[in-house]
Image (cartoon, rainbow, N blue to C red):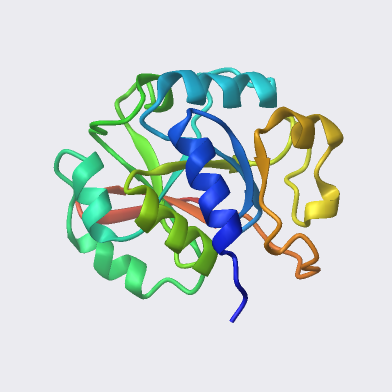
Length: 189
């Protein structure tokens, strides 16, 4: 088993202080921050040169976390997710307890339950959701490998996670669905 304890400790310190981390997720490399901290979320938008009207994804450790940050989710979505063959981000209605500049104008939030070992440990120990937006300037391709990440992004965060920097497995973004009234609408296959 790979030891990423130092990365977890450093990431937790930065997240608690309202800072930004650059970290591997279950999909592409991401820029992360405390999803409940409006100033930290604003820093991510500025770093990415992105309008705050464009939504960002939030990672959580498990189904219970979804229940903390969504007012009344349709629980059947969890059955759907159990059958998913790849990481799937769900757009939920009625977000609660998250930074206001992270929630869509319609009150929605994109959440993915993450199973990647580093992220899962980080999320469980942080005990709050973490923003996960691709590590790129808005409009540029997503960073599938650490080596794809621009210097501007690397210099703009407070901590670069070392774990998986040498990984050459090409990753893809998650699929994205909207779940309404027990029906799935696929937005990104």
